[in-house]
Image 1 (cartoon, rainbow, N blue to C red):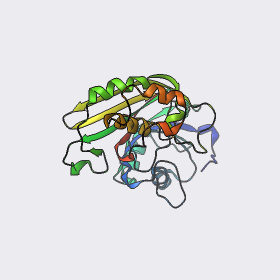
Image 2: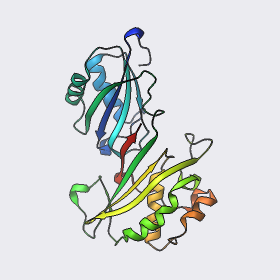
Image 3: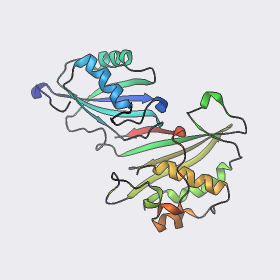
Length: 254
């Protein structure tokens, strides 16, 4: 779907969607696995045909959700934005919703034009599970001192080499420095939310940050251990990768 005819009438549209990640193997097209991109391309093909170019703002892992996910769509089709939103919401699975569409300059790119992203991680902190949050939050039975973890998490803030908080694979090459602008741990009743904004994220970075904070909660790591873990630049010193179910791409800033 890379060939585009009618270059003189080419438009670039910024679409904002949200999705429940439970039924998908992430955003990006894969062989033998159903993804959000595949669902979106199928719906789009039914509306405007096959000539379009689609760029997502981020890769998301299997089971990860999005409150806000952005897509740039290049097409010569003249369909108005409001009609496209309505048509997509009729064709897409019920677990995906298009919230907005607007025209942007042709050089806009959903991923590379982004200046920062915010993720949240939801933890249902109660001895009793919440059946309505199954697959949408991590159920953690033991008491969490959110103020202790919030203090510990401030060591993440700043520009650091986050090699220790990254699952290394072919996608992570070169400079692994990222600038974390904010990290907070808050509670609303039995729901604990970890919120992090950065200029970019490495593979599994947020889930490893969360897993490390939970190791601190368990007493297996000291509350002041995060600076040393960062300095070691070695994945084995950080905590485990927290499950995907609690993670949401929450906001994309341009």
